[in-house]
Length: 337
Ligand SMILES: Nc1nc2c(c(=O)[nH]1)N[C@H]1C(S)=C(S)[C@@H](COP(=O)(O)O)O[C@H]1N2
Ligand SMILES: [Mo]
Image (tube, rainbow, N blue to C red; front, top):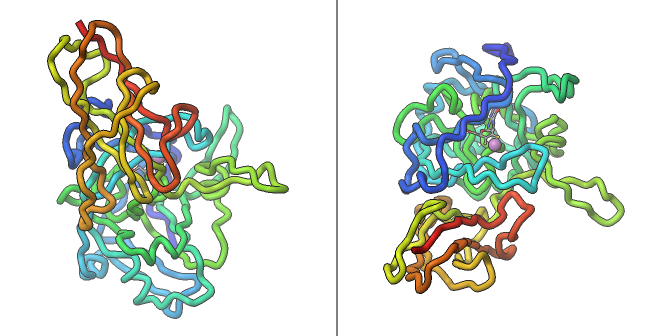
């Protein structure tokens, strides 16, 4: 298939909001970050098409009208950038909660007939280019990711064409992109043009090199693990960093928590992590199970001084690490007078 546009414009990283600005439950589109590794390809819905091939009974090509004719699913889900593609130790706090609409990939694949031997979907975007590193060319690549079929079978993996009730913006993947709720943003391939069912993982630079964490295993110190499921994380929205509070006046410490697994709870510390108390965490809502959840904790300062609020979420894999991890705890320093 011909690529509609060839771009080597380079990395676009637009992180428009700080934690204290993330007050809306559904993030307004203008506040959603943009990440594009190889520029933004110019595409239009009229001549867009999606190829579905590999281990399927009936390879097919879906055009935009056919995509829109499929049952429309609307879901709210956490949209979180994993951050540095080569460093799992840096938290970025770049997270939003977005309402997406599109067709469920599970339905699309069922129509193509997935062969028993298939284990992964390889998804490619229209963007591609030269990836460099300090003046050296690392690879000439397309943006390709692979998603385990087990995740797709859980449902709600979308071929999305709407974001917050409107057509996807050009930078957000227009006319159609993958959305993999419960996985890091890197997996949600924008400007989607090809899906391939395969038995093994894809060998692309974005599936084997970038967005892979060190995961030393017995006998293989170099082993790496793809950045798929969202680790438990939380973000303090209020008070803002450097806020000045008053002795004796209660404040609500509140924010958002999420996990690609099962969120267990959120703890709050006001002394940098020495002592912890359980925050109130809003109930999980079955219809919004990939969305973030609000937590809150009422705190009344007794004495003047400097304090450090810390929020720590936990899921079935345990609590957020204190530091040195993509999902390390969020800390907010404030002053009481
Ligand atoms: N085709 C393509 N899809 C992509 C990317 C990209 O560079 N090209 N970047 C990924 C990364 S790292 C993230 S965090 C999200 C960002 O989506 P957004 O820009 O709509 O917020 O898209 C993902 N999908
Ligand atoms: Mo990202």
